[in-house]
Amino acid sequence: MKMLFAMLMLCATLVAGAQTSTTTSLVADKQTGGLGTIFTLTATVTDAQGPVRLGQVTFYDGDPSGPAAALGTVVLNGANGTATLKRAFAIGSHSITAKFLGTNTEASSSSSSPTITVTGQYESSMTLYAEGSGSSLKLIAPVVGQGLIPITGSVTFTDTTTNTVVGNSPLNTAVLRNNFQLKSTLESNSIYAVAADFNGDGKLDLATIGRPGVPQVFLGNGDGTFGPGKPLTVSLDFPQTATAGDFNGDGKQDLAILSESGLTIALGHGDGTFQVLPPVVVGYDVRSAVTAGDFNNDGKLDLAVATHNDTGNASIIILLGHGNGEFQTTQVLDLEEGASIPTYLLTADFNGDGKADLAYMFFRGPVSIFIGHGNGTFSSALDVPSITDGRSLDVGDFNGDGKPDLVISYASLTSAPSHIAVLLGHGNGTFEEVDTPVSLPYPLYMAVGDFNGDGKLDIVALDGDEGAPPPYEVLLGHGNGTFLSMGPATVPGRDLLEFGPTFVGDFNNDGVIDFGSEPANFTTLKYDSYVFTTSGTSTAAAGLTDFTLTGGGTHVIYATFSGDGTFTKSQSGFIDLF
Image (tube, rainbow, N blue to C red; front, side, top):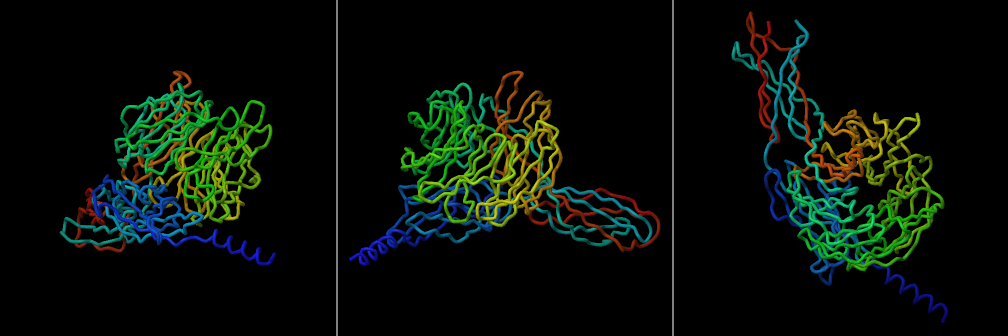
């Protein structure tokens, strides 16, 4: 009988753990459009019984294993089993894939990859000069494209004196260089902002929280500017931070806001307005960080909340979502007693088992990892070694191996040099540190994204020391965990201002990631929201040697760029050769 019982229990366990096969399909509402066109991507997930109504779908542009390929993750609409993402793309062709991430009961699946095309051309310009003399004379024609896509093609060199073509030469490998423009300054009186599409029009909006405690939503115009702030019908005591997600599975973005009032869930109506639920007391008095993820693999978004109090107690509260905007505490993870404030809390699969883990950092370090069991509980914290004096924390795949890495900014108030450290993940919960020096004296905040459109993650480090004006520094990723610094830059005319927490997204619908910050001016006591849009250039050059000029005297030479379908044709000025 005991053996029979054991066999029955084993069968029951196998049945309970089995996953049903699924199919994911993907359609776009259009196949072509000009720059700035918003495409609606709809993924449908089904199994043998019909629509799958719980779970998440991630959309990708290009190879899903690429570090910057993910466009966003969307919760399935419980009404019809679809996930919809609206966004614009850069000029060119884009192969889009949707992947259903799977749940405890439904297996993951990926769609086919339809292609969408954004038509149009970026402007190009060129110059021409000569160097050397005699047999070593060389013509050089740099071509600059106004877009963050590698410029290709060839250059033709023409002698107007004899009306003959001197030669042709291909462009060398393009160098991409990005620039940032302060596009919007929103009088939000906020200390934190969340970027999401709150009215479903495919244009990113901003939700801001600050002092006084009335959150606002600024609806984006799709060009880097925003409409006036719309306050939520709630007033919170000392709001600290927030995150966005679809917490009730209706296909509309919601908000989870932390304050001394508690955890407040605001359910989006899909038009930029919200139904605000009463605050729920969670953990200790001060709630400093929040992240969303599916911690028990049931297809519903859950929350992790970092809390602390004045006596040195700190904890992370795990709240499992019911799929209707309500949550239930399942575990309290006690943190190091007497440590500083837990300021950063992130979700990723750090050990490659398909279950969401947590990374958190106290202000000035250290960093620790909680490994998720996939049932809403987590193991004891694993400290990441050698992390002290860390100021900000973010996650991304900086070396393109498909394993999540961490990046930390170090800002020392002593003579120790400030720097950025990338912790390259081994895929088992351990990391290897790679340092990148920065010029900033106090890099307190960071923004992570592909800011130059080369498919590799970059970093913008923001100085947190009050200055006139404050600097920031762009670090372009090489795709191997190291970076090339573009040197410090400043925000002109913004004196006595200190950068604050950051947010990222494509705010002007050009297909390139932008960023924003919540700076503070302690002279005027203003707390605004700054949005920087990304622009940039693609520069390559063609050189011509070993050419012959027919006849004597002066020869007037010019060069023409043929265009490459993405960039327009252009012509240089004229130079004289003797």
